[in-house]
Amino acid sequence: MEMDHKKTPYFNQVQAYVKRHHVQHDVPGHKGHLDNELSSFIGKKAFTMDVNAPRGLDNLNKPTGVIKEAAELMADAFHAEKAYFLTGGTTMGILSMIMSICRANEKIIMPRNVHKSVISALILSGAVPIFIKPQLDNHLGIANHMALEDIRQAIHDHPDAKAVFIINPTYFGVTSDIKAIVDLAHEHDMIAMTDEAHGSHFPFSQQLPLSSMRAGADMSACSLHKTVGSLTQSSILIAQGPRIDHIRLRSTINMLQSTSPSNLLLSSLDVARKTIYFEGPVKLPQVIRMAADARRKIAAIPGLAVADKAYFQALGATGYDETKIIVKVSDLGITGFDVYKELFDEHRVTVELAETHLILAVLSIGTTKADLDALVNALKKISQKYQKQQLPPLQAKFSYTYPEAYTRPRDAYHAPKKYVPYDQSVDEIAAESVMIYPPGIPIVIPGEIITADILEDLDLYKRSGSVILSDTEGGYIKVVDKDLWFKWEEDHAND
Ligand SMILES: Cc1ncc(COP(=O)(O)O)c(C=O)c1O
Image (cartoon, rainbow, N blue to C red; front, side, top):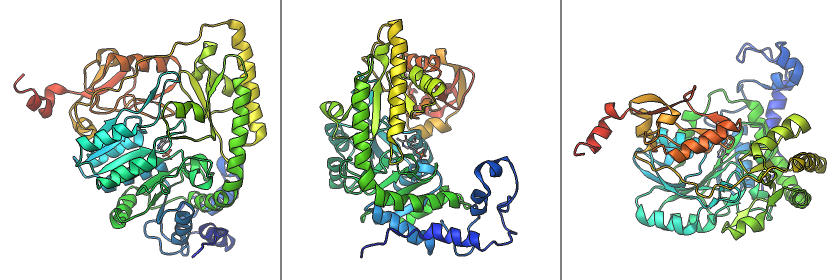
């Protein structure tokens, strides 16, 4: 039966509750009307809407009313059988997917360029990652898709793996052959799960890469807040097919979900679904056309280059999300970090992220032509400024390596620790993840052996002023204290 996507059942119920003007002797403590700087800045309405699941607003942990109805509409829009609303971002979706499928010591095949939430899921579940090296793009200095052959080999070498984890697409918009990977996983009785943090808009235009549900994946976590238009931190987990145990999945989600979910976030999911359902098919092709036009203009600016679908497909990628714009800036002799900062400070233009050689702009149905003109004009000015300085282009680094794993992340996380200065950490086993953020893809994770190459990369990032995320501050890194670690003793008893 066709569903009525004009409906926003959850949001409507919240509005109805607000209009009843209840006297509030329940939480939250702001009671909907407390005056403070925030309420006067954003307006009282946001506070009056922020109520804690009173009667009629259903229960996110066990939906039977308007949340259930809103989730059914969401599932339908995303071609899934079931959708779960999440108020802890796709981070929470990824934790839930992996923890519901993998028990301790069970294997999961995945590319090494996963987001930090995947590493957290490995620590929490105790699963063993079978890492595939993604295709590395030395020209842009980024990691792209997974080669199908590498998945085939990993499945052959680890037929006991429980699942294959696919990024659809990477932060930079690149997709692997998701359909073939899903089919391969299923042929070998493995779950196919996807990180669609950056691909939530895929189901709404045929000009975009294949969405995970269309490709037949079992489950997917999607950041609707990133590319679809809901409020930051609101995401969904969608699932289909007979391989998913929804009782276990629901109980895992409920372990991670707050018992006081924000109904601003939930309302924003409900409304964003309606908007993308009706506007996506019309506006996404327009955004793709505007992005192509902006790419053409940027490519004509001296010292700048762009990477497009043809570029990534020539490197073997299956698809590319053309609502993203990658600009290579390093031929100007400056880094992406420099350009990010200059765009932000001098031109009041914010892009999603910088890497050594590039900047990345993420577009959506909220992007206007004027927004893109502002980016293009600012880039022109930056190019003019640096062209005059005639700096030598930055050289690409031609060997990117990933560290070897000595043990699974959970072992290293729980092992005895010590703290050593970075420059004395070569050959130590990391006990924490270290990454720049964004993109939040760890350079080293717990259990991996630290190399001089990694330290060199980190040093470069530090000097570029990037935000380095790690547990330890002050130039130290947390590593496994091998002298106190029974596993090291056991493994080296006969050395
Ligand atoms: C590839 C990828 N996966 C997962 C996440 C986590 O998503 P969220 O921020 O919604 O928790 C991110 C966030 O940046 C991401 O880039």
